[in-house]
Image (cartoon, rainbow, N blue to C red; front, side, top):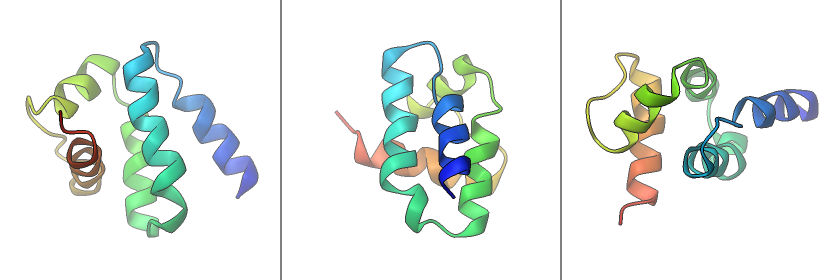
Length: 81
């Protein structure tokens, strides 16, 4: 699992500090206890474009994939202003 976490940490480096922190939070706090489907959803999110991720986090739409949408919802719930 260490190699997988290292790979995912690298992929969490997005280009904006805010996005890095939000997806990094989910990886560190939620990923270890998430089931396989939710982990796959998170990995799929990391394949998406940054503008899409940012818009979803801001509540402007959501991913079509159910597990990806769950991850976005958890990030949004945890980090509401």
